[in-house]
Image (cartoon, rainbow, N blue to C red; front, side, top):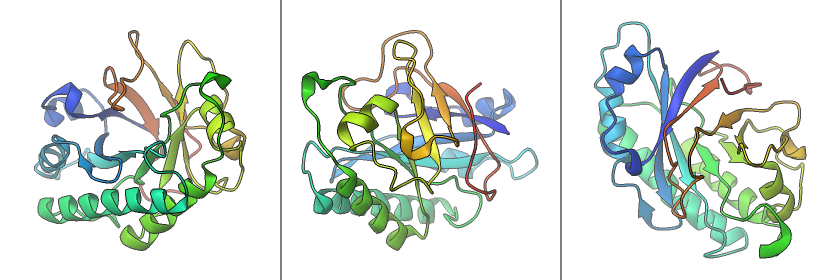
Length: 226
């Protein structure tokens, strides 16, 4: 197992050399949100990772998209957002001389926009998610993974198990204490939250949080958070 961090522009410039020196082995950076937004720090972070010395220990890049089915529901909404994510990801990797096919973590769909109870209503966005993942596979050749929490999955994805074959990066909010969604029970990939406020409205993490995952190129992860 290897440990790493997730970041967005809210953390400012990331000294990835210092992160690697501290023992972490990857950085998952926010790439996009919605159908037309690109995180302003994404390409800078990816370039910094690409510029690291290639000598061991290797440091792996990763990227996530913050999903907004509330902007446009239905399969076509997910397809549009995946198009945005894929375009940015492919272009940024090419600019930085990185390969999405080797040594790059599975691109992640961050699906956690909604509240974790019934006060904001319920919906089944599983078609939106499927549309997103289908386009992601077609455009990048990667299957993707899903970052979500049990209650979000229950109230906003119909508690579906149709994505059970995909890796899960499980949200683990300290105030919530949720278990993995039924769709991925048995292969949890938890992300622990540091003390402080939860994610802000634009999806940026309140603080960089350590996560653990298997080495890139291995089988679907059965991972946990340190």
